[in-house]
Amino acid sequence: MEEKDKKEEMNPEETAEDTAGENVPETSEEETEPDTAEEAQTSDEDVPESGNEPENGGQSEKKGFFKKKEKKDKKDEQIAELTDKLKRQLAEFENFRNRTEREKTQMYAVGARDVIEKILPVVDNFERGLKSIPEEEKDGPVASGMDKIYKQLVAVLTDLGVTPIETVGQEFDPQLHNAVMHVEDEETGENMIVEEFQKGYKYKDAVLRHSMVKVAN
Image (tube, one colour):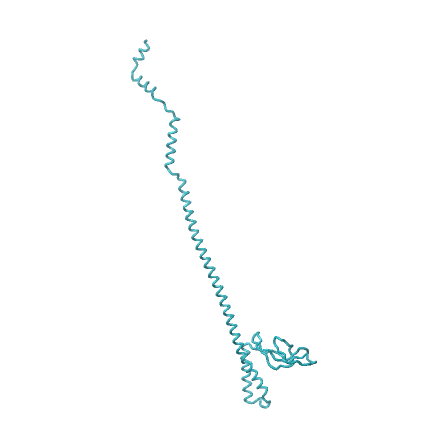
């Protein structure tokens, strides 16, 4: 009975503190940690990661680089295409110029050949006329004038590339000679030319007129 009386006589403030301490539940460290972790996770989600920005920037830079490279490749292709066309046109022009020069040369050769073929009978007549002059008249003014004209005409033909074909004493060549007579001659070798009836001529490497000859069998 005395102990109960003592408790009742205790300070009412101490009694209130004990009662408050018994009624308030204790919060453990384990319960507070999740709240802290959730706050940290929330803060991490709100703040964008700094590592993603350079990657996105790098991708955009790569895309921009590839676009520039594609444009450059198209220009290079156009340059290559135009260069190829230019080379083809230059080659075609060079072929055209060479072909035109050949045609001009051929036309000149054909034209010169036609003119020379028409002059050859004139040369033949000069030769026949000079042979028909008697010996006592060869020193006369007429014969001297004919001989000078004949020599001048032959010199002009020689400058143009016209040369006479050799005949007497040469072996018969069907590419150069035209045999109009054959003769039996034991002293002369077989198939040798013994006489010329009409002189033949060559224009450069082409035969203008075959020589008319007599051939020994």
